[in-house]
Image 1 (cartoon, rainbow, N blue to C red):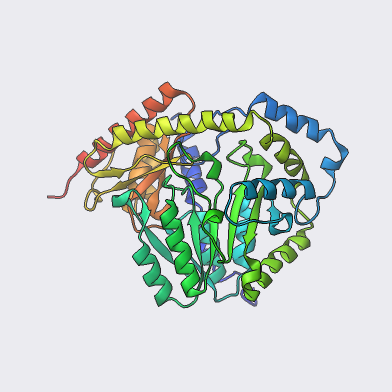
Image 2: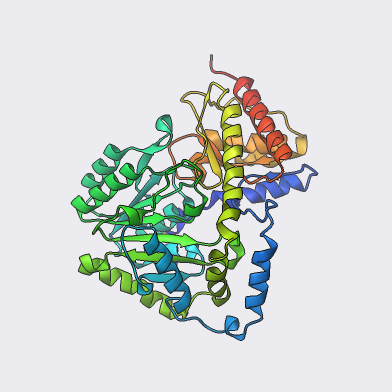
Length: 435
């Protein structure tokens, strides 16, 4: 081309969670069954949305207005329902006009980072969720800036690390929180949230809290939404139905804007998000029409309770089994349906491997120059068919480890999966140790 057409941040766009699928499918084609532990899609993993939710969706699909545009902000009655429910929870009070719908939170994330001033940065957690970290890095054309989640303290954020990086990088305009966290399953304590709000307040920043899993926090986790501690600090909370109903194919998410009246620049930024959505006209109508009917149904929250109790049970089982491996650090998730295992320093080396069929070994061979945790993930995939995601390349982290899901609904199969994962870990770690 006679002039450059590639965005300078294009090389920062990476989504290992799906990219590993290409390798897994090639191995699957050799006859090796694959156990897909890479993507958090409850429906694909066998969870069946209840018949009563399907009936509500089916009835809404028969209504003519489900085929029409919605208002750009979202359906009036749906936003009013969400605002009323949010206000009942306590904390900051909002109106329907503080809510903006998107075609899933991926759309919201892309829009938010794309609307930032070219020099403004948002610091996020490490390990990072790649949709956020890639979009932020691509926006800036620079590596994503992160604060540390500490695996030694159950993934609690290192607040000193966060504040030191905020102070050292005046281009940081915002702090990202993912609560409950993906990939670790960590739930932020209220005092930690309040401390992060205080840092934002003192340095003149806004916050983004991705709360897509907020209704999937486990019993006893003490989950608190950002709205409960935000005070007068500008912020954006993000929610959706993909994981809750679950209906990931609906691509239905929304943001809640807090305290836009406290800062003129933040207010203008919030208006720019609405103006950007106007160019697309609106988000998809059908799931918006369905949302209040499902969430107000008396069966909804008992249904969520059943799901989170199952995830909690699986998380505790996985932690019990995998924590017995000396070179692995693991904590049971307290929300969402993911867990992350971290290898202790020095546990991995370039000589380790697992026995695998020759055809599968040939498929992973071209990729084995990768990070040490990615080498483990590839060997595990070739040997056992278990497809997990490496922490370093998949979640923009300097830690070595992997993420797996808690979505296998058949308890016997889940226990077999964890047993096979533990056996693979033990065999790999023992296969070659540095002299």
